[in-house]
Length: 454
Image 1 (cartoon, rainbow, N blue to C red):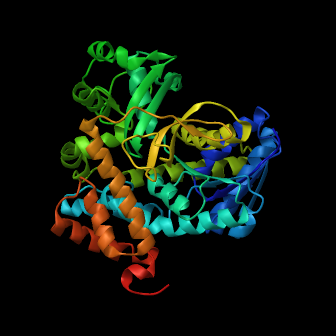
Image 2: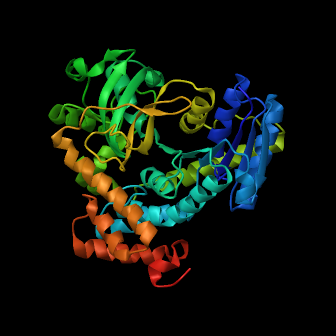
Image 3: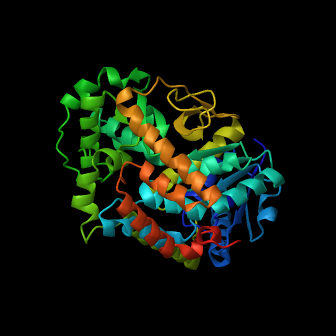
């Protein structure tokens, strides 16, 4: 294929280890050879360091790849065929506040669901809107690939801002694939053999079809579950080569028992169906390590790893670990699929145009299976069962209202968005959390929320 130009917004992020590794893998196979990767970030030290490591790694690996960086957005976007968004306004410290301030009220804290997700969006969407408008002006034919949370709201904001060639990605679908691999008694490393067709809203989806090499797994699901040890021997959420189920997977099988389908994002089903257990036995435990803390620790390890490579002169574009590799393979894999017209199934966040999810309106942003290629094509699913439709509609309303709040700077809609999520149903408590989070995040939020003009 001809060389392409990829602009990465947020190019100083530690996630670049996974993105560069996947680009390098495709370049070794010839598809991305001669391509240019332009990194854009507001942190010059971080983005310059990532560019230096990428250049050294490509040189040592013998790859024909060009890496550059710029602090000028228009320059970064000029001539781009693909734009990959990977940003986190406020950084992990702000995410920690999203996770922990609601806990003080004994309420859910998270970066994509509940009131924490609302405030992650309020910080992020102003930048997303700016970037989407710039993409539409500078490189209107470029695909905007969003790997920024909260992905559902991000894609909605991009489309509302005028750039319709926008899709989002989330690795949550792998949870049900890993579960099915264990039920089939095959190694988790072979979970890619399983095709999962989700339907719903990002972080609240259901697997409407599950297949292993063309075989319908729902036809044998009862037998698979009956022949599996349903004790959570792998702990609460551990995912590794351990063939035993973890607690999240056990709970997903319990949901199947009553609803007849598995959650498409098993990890996030707990925020809707096992919230009390999650709160009382984990989040309210003073020793609990929140995801922001884990990511910060992992990022520090990545930076030490990169520094050691640069010091030794042995930089190489390889992923830091298995999870790192999975992130890059999904994000860069989507670019590869579109650029090279490669047909494969991927879980993608898109507009519900044509109603691939029949229960939701055309302008809803949904997560569905897509056949990748030069134009990703959503796969229409059967209607969601009534038993789960209501909760999925709650998730849709929560996401839509959050984007409405971000675009209007209306605090009333902020509260409406938070209370649309089933985790928050008490007005007094939700109002308190909202005020606490506005105060904590003030420097990262638009001044219009505080009665000031920009």
